[in-house]
Image (cartoon, rainbow, N blue to C red; front, side, top):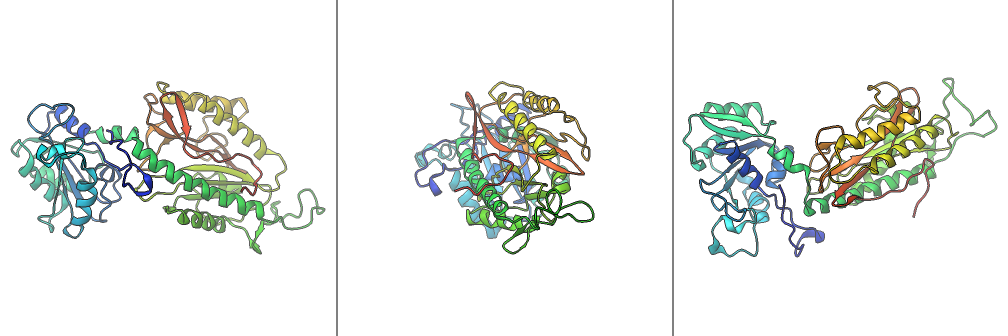
Length: 450
């Protein structure tokens, strides 16, 4: 599923306009000999957000797509229609985002409803029966739009359709079948989507820069002549760093990162993961731990931009390290990252990228197949990023890399008793290799950068 790559005239901040191409959905309906496609969800449903570009309410609404009975002409289907069942109070927004946002400004009105849209699928907003459940509204709309009468009518839905909506559709005489057409389409990003990903990734690395600056400015507490590395507590750990006159914790550092993200117009979305010492081995740590000298500080920053697209970057730092486990782990992860990137090009099996990263970590003496909670490499090398933080393709899954895939490359090693090291970038697979969407420097010792 692609979007048009029209020139960005009039687009906000010079970005290409987002226009989801619904033809693959129409084709999936035809291929399955079905009558329609139905999706039901709210603004947290990323499939529905992608299909409609409607960032509507937190209560369910529905999308119905029906093909025409005739054959497509020049890849366009003038008879195909898509209707969004929006709450009445959101009609103006739905008309703007779902209908007007998808129109072809160069088409003549006389060309017909479908011809006014680049994918040939005419769009409309329906706000009737607002008191009914979204599944009921979708079933009623099917009776109005679908060429096949109800009763044994085959309807495609995403696998994630809510159970109650499925029940309403089935009670209305529809036979539901799951399709992966939307998930498959989302894997390959268009130039307009890459615009958004690049924009939010630039904000992501700005947040990383703020974190590194704070760590670089922090102070090691205590004289250095009280034993190796300075004074230590009863458990052998050094006192926390101090920054701006107070002990530095993961929560204080998280707030600094999130302020930097907000200043650049993106939301942290609860995804600023910072671990220190043993908690750096927790892949999703959001607690409040002291940050101590000599221990790894792992920052995984994944904000969401205004159009719903995510950024994702990870770096690991150590303040006043002694060159022990953390240094060996960092060197190994850097080498694994390079080995993984060396494999990225169109046509390469996605698993190959993961395999090369794992092999490199094994060469440095780390278990490449460790389970969660064990010491070693405990996760895949990467995943797709788009309107979901985790979507296809997976670098441990089936299939080959294709131009337009946007994936993370993020090898890491962990020791639950010591800490963790991970390095992550967001890359676009291009026709002849890859592009890092927003580069950020490497280095285990934090540095104040211009």
